[in-house]
Picture: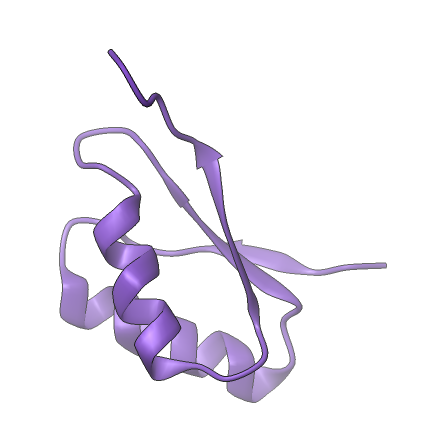
Length: 64
């Protein structure tokens, strides 16, 4: 079974810390949602802070 959690997307520092913590405790992946803010910047900072965890979007509209 794969275990994935959600990144906060309202604060990039929190997204980076959450990605590091998720990787440290053994999560397989993290996703960012497109709700009040776009999912791409939180995923970018998560990519810089992690080494092996899978990153993804839960909902991302390219051309709203």
